[in-house]
Amino acid sequence: MLDFSFSAFQSYAWWELLIELGIIWLLVFLVFRFLRGTRGLGVVKGLFIGSLFLLLLYVINFSTESFGRLQVIFNWGVQIAAVLLIVIFQPELRQAAIRIGQARFLRFGREQGKDFAESISEAVDFLSKNQFGALIAIERSIRLGGLVEGGQMLDAKLSARLLQSIFWPNSPLHDLGVVIREDRILAAGVQFPLAEEGSLPSRYGSRHRAAVGLAAESDCVVVIVSEETGITSIAVDGRLESPVPREQFASVLRQALQLPGAQAAEEQAAEASKQVTTEP
Image (cartoon, rainbow, N blue to C red; front, side, top):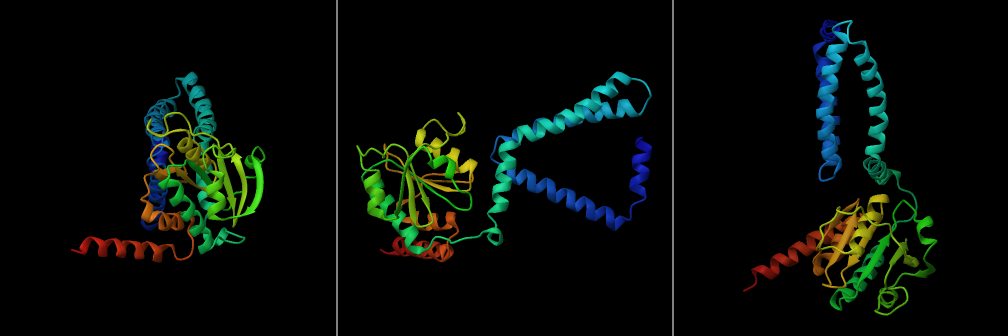
């Protein structure tokens, strides 16, 4: 069998073999890049060791006519492994599908504009200064219709003052999350799914776990304001960016939402910070 495999490679043209190896290397690189920083990377390392064991079984099984029982185990093991891969990497596969759907040419419908980001930034700045906790989910291409059913439907025009009043202490809706769709506050008092235990350092509370949990299951951008410290954070694609400096929050939010002018706003903020540091 091994002799047959080597003879099959020898029948390839050298340029065809190089192209195939290049494509395989690119696919492996993209998989590792996507899994970097996730628990899936540890699973890949374990599967690599398991693959070496399966390769050893393959050599034993097909290099001799003996060990028939091992051959049966090998055949069944490959089939079961294919199913296990789908189950184990279900969160990563879902994230990959979400990222593909985030491509600009696949997006339909209206995008948020400049006033949208400014309203949220103004509200977050107020909440952060006063250390009022907040949890704001901003929809993109994936709707959160099933999630908002358990909350209080508002369907109100987005404004900084309305967000501030929702998260004002002792407000009936301030403990849970708000869902924003386009330029409207769709619902408040919404319970977000929590990220798995241990996915975040212990210094982060339930708001941050809820933000990461929702960002991992959808393509929305989630804004968090800590009630204890007033620090602002942003969760996107299942990752948490924290802390986000207050003066840079607007540009970071625009960049996370991929709004028009996000790059220009970031450059202006960087230029302003340089001017401040160079002044005597």
